[in-house]
Image (tube, rainbow, N blue to C red):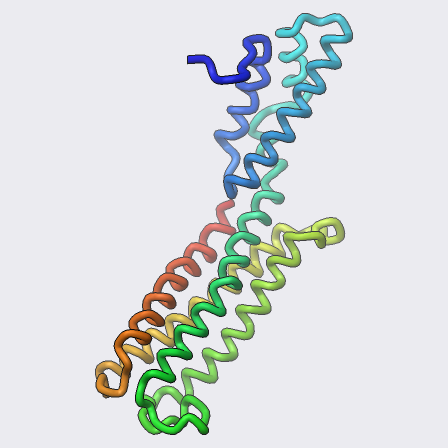
Length: 231
């Protein structure tokens, strides 16, 4: 069945675009924007050749020939798509942070871990390892937020001034995934130890919600470490 708006005379253009799309990785929205812009450029080139006297089919063939090998064209967009992938992961990591923080705060408040006027690792019911793990997790948390912010910045307006913006964005997103994933893993390990040591001190509902939130973000953080490398 013919697609709406399909013109047989433009088949070389659409086939060429499809070949590029087949080897172009990256977020769907960024890919769609690039492919739409690419097709518009091809149509402009086709129109120019048509006005020069070529038939519609010959003009489309000439336009695609000017743009070059589809694999090389797709590769030329790789930095932009790599930065877009990094940006998407960094934005989600940043957006999820308030949710995870509120979840663990509610879990701590609802649980019976001792006096609240002291630092968390000094609470009466806290596990022995908290005094080491929580400060380290806090430092990793700050580092992760800074790295995610850097990824968003490097993949935004700064792309005009940063020659290696894609590498900076992807490296920052990977660093953010490692740091924030380490925070969630630490919290889950501390929770596991607390359950084994003194389960009665924990409020089941908020603790479960917090654990699920960190588990989900930990899985996403693992993707943010892998995907920017392959985009």
